[in-house]
Length: 297
Length: 247
Image 1 (tube, chains in turn brown, yellow):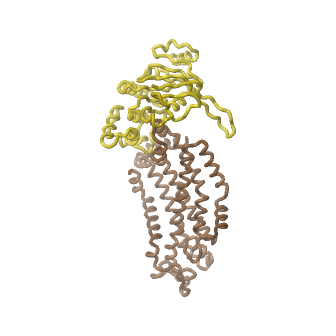
Image 2 (cartoon, rainbow over the protein chains, first blue to last red; image 1 turned 45 degrees about the vertical axis):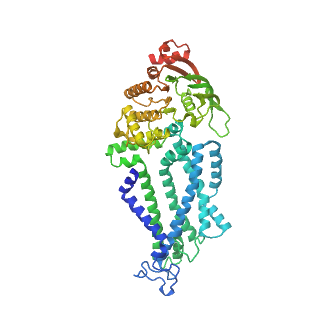
Image 3 (cartoon, one colour; image 1 turned 45 degrees about the horizontal axis):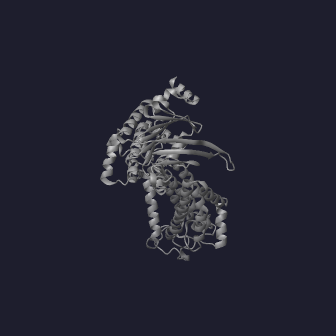
């Protein structure tokens, strides 16, 4: 568990990880944590500033901003995470099979991906919303449908590269099964790559979901969602700009935390990068050139 | 034991609609007996490494058959652990995420060894290739080329194979390290009575290790000759090859 030790040493990574775990927990336990009902309207408290009872103040309908923020975690982070896991899962399986076995199977699967990828992502999502109706679940389905080919392509490329390596050839030569080679060797070396692409698209998916909610195609009022809260705050953008602050910051911080964590994870998982941090400078630069030479191949 | 008969292999040339095929190997015949060391010599592009992959069962020949102890090498279960390999590129021959221990364990697990027995065997193997216990927890990037190649040899020997394919196993090492690894291979070959298929472009190394050498040129066997009679090669290509070493 050397990689775990490496990760624990990285302060930014630990901060990001703790932040995300806290956010996720807050989302799961939203009914217990939120001080008020996120949908309860108090017209007498419109635009009330922060107070002890309403720590982040109230919005244009007098609803508790903090409660809405906490309830908004579920669609904004947790459901997006679920959609991401599903699309990485599908893309991963397709990518592994195509990249490892090659040949006809590879060609067929990749043409299928090409067909899916030739639709622009937003158009695909809009079309699915058009057919199936407005709502979070349909957006998530559209996400899974439009993202998996992209993951499949990227994962295939990285699997293909690792499947060429001599350690895989040795394993094949002494008669280790394809399944074991894939799980014990390739899955291990491909994990950092997958973690990075998955996390970078988690950021963009959170932004996209917020974008769709902003357009009124995702979560429907009066339910809370971060993009939706931004959209509502837009109406009073000039008179009460501070209302954009809470949901905007929530999105930015979460996306940043995910990206930092993915970056740190990649460093922690790679035994070469993990050790080199403690080595003298000259050695580190020597190692770096070795690494770049290798990945350039 | 190892019998290669009429093997041919061609690869498709690049390009989506290209029907052209490049013949890499044509009509290869040879046999290798128990405990024998056969050198396969040829320059780059002669098809010798392809031949190595075919013998290992990683790829399948277009025509002909490769029989190992009477069974086709393409059957994975039949050859499990009996044929092993050491490759050229020491930067990628051990999974960068594996420690030396994990890399050798992979072979030991294949033959159903585990627990204390495997741990003892691991120490024994490391000792045999001239490395001590402290190497167990090291990652391949912390080892030198010669050390990685030693680990690869230990890993290859771990399954008690009858035959090891050495595909340019010493070509990427420095001169003095090459000699050390060659000596190690020779000594191991005598202890385990393994046969080697020593694929190389280095005639001198082959002459040191092998009993017989087979000279391959443009995918065909030019000549097969015992090492003692290496001076008396008949074909023009083999003479040219020999002449280059003499100079």
